[in-house]
Length: 581
Ligand SMILES: *[C@@H]1O[C@H](CO)[C@@H](O)[C@H](O)[C@H]1NC(C)=O
Ligand SMILES: *[C@@H]1O[C@H](CO)[C@@H](O)[C@H](O)[C@H]1NC(C)=O
Ligand SMILES: *[C@@H]1O[C@H](CO)[C@@H](O)[C@H](O)[C@H]1NC(C)=O
Ligand SMILES: *[C@@H]1O[C@H](CO)[C@@H](O)[C@H](O)[C@H]1NC(C)=O
Ligand SMILES: *[C@@H]1O[C@H](CO)[C@@H](O)[C@H](O)[C@H]1NC(C)=O
Ligand SMILES: CC(=O)N[C@H]1CO[C@H](CO)[C@@H](O)[C@@H]1O
Image (cartoon, rainbow, N blue to C red; front, side):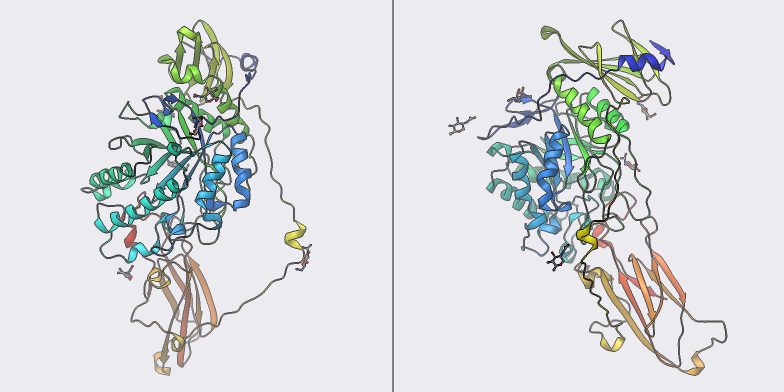
């Protein structure tokens, strides 16, 4: 039953925040090794259900000196789990040559998570997307004959299996799996495969089945997940990625728990994008709708985005990654997002007994109004979630004989099914603001060096072809830059241009940007954008009787991770090339 438009005053009084004593994130793994399993309610550590508040923090996107602080802060934010992808092209830049140094020291990072008594989720992929150069796939994969990425293709499966087994072994050697006393409780195989399964119509299912069996055969002692799917083969747990998993996702297999691996805290940005906003209230609302329906793990993507250093980012992606996350690019807390979510975690944790072991029931209280109840009658424990899914319409509901005011698009948590202890719209945390100051270290005492490169001419070139060659074939993704140059002779009769009419240099490019020169003079620059990738460069040039030189400096900014609208299928056919018209 619903009474509309109740007075706001009532609400304020009813919503005094009540936070019972709560211990920081708990480590329920034993150092001697724990069994990680699951039932339809949650993941289980040594047979006991548990709650998982997880934050994505990618190790290569911050300097290692910052890692301890980030992990500590995440723990202060009420998280008990850190999630990360594994970055194949960073770790294996050349076949069989591995790099786990500095920012790429995955083992050091996981040990640090362990030292902070937190769990870890490792998303191996090894295709990861992640707005990372080439979605994490090494360039050299493209040079393997007949390879089709992420398909039921022997060449791809062979390389994928080799890398997955290599990483699993590395984690085992360092005793990092929970089964060995380490922090890793889940690992992920593949990534959002649902997006492309249809593109590989016949073989998508076969590939997925193979990937699942291959993963399971590594015998890590902890479950595997596949994300953005509503079902997964065998023992593999499917998980949701999205903004509103409580509303948009249905788990088909009820023997598996509801896990949410990517709840976007904002959105990554490409050059030219507006600041991505997602309010603390909206994130909290989405998390509680998911938990109200029985979710028991949420991973904030990203909890801290960090920086796309060097050539790490995918095409057009900004260097600052998810600066709007609960911790900003520099690792500082973004309020009220950080604090509002921390309060939410603390409240649910305080009532985890009723929440994880209570009987779950559901009641519709009016149009758009719902109650989800978790009750342990023997222990007199009860926890309920009252939710108002109506946009722009606050209201009052009667629940178990009491009136409760629920603001529009919000969820209230009721302790003992009576007292409101949290509402997603009531933020008790102050806003923080970031300001910039010039620091002495970076502004004083700088020494600058300037380099100037000779604009090359045809006579200096080593690689020659009738048509411009594909850029990635040439640079092998080791550089963002490639010069293209051509020379030709004009007789005075060839020059039909007189007076104001000048010849036009026209270049069609599928790379990201270019600078044009004619006879050593700058002609102009052109670029594509994240939305419109190809571009046509057209600028008038001055040509002369005799030999003319046209030179183009083409640049890329990260290899693409998708080509079809929302799909990474056939990425191996992706090209950056030129036609000079
Ligand atoms: C871990 O193993 C050691 C040696 O086997 C044993 O002494 C200790 O009690 C075990 N600890 C736990 C928590 O099981
Ligand atoms: C985890 O361990 C702590 C303390 O060791 C205990 O209080 C808590 O109930 C445990 N949590 C679960 C879900 O078993
Ligand atoms: C190099 O580029 C051409 C297209 O320009 C393409 O057909 C070929 O497959 C590429 N080779 C590799 C190894 O990617
Ligand atoms: C909640 O509201 C959203 C947005 O209006 C809608 O898409 C969704 O279907 C609603 N969910 C339910 C269970 O009514
Ligand atoms: C300026 O540079 C010199 C020489 O590299 C160094 O010794 C000094 O500490 C620097 N001063 C500041 C303020 O960074
Ligand atoms: C699956 C999904 O909900 N994706 C959304 C993620 O957020 C971006 C930015 O708001 C949306 O454009 C996507 O549709």
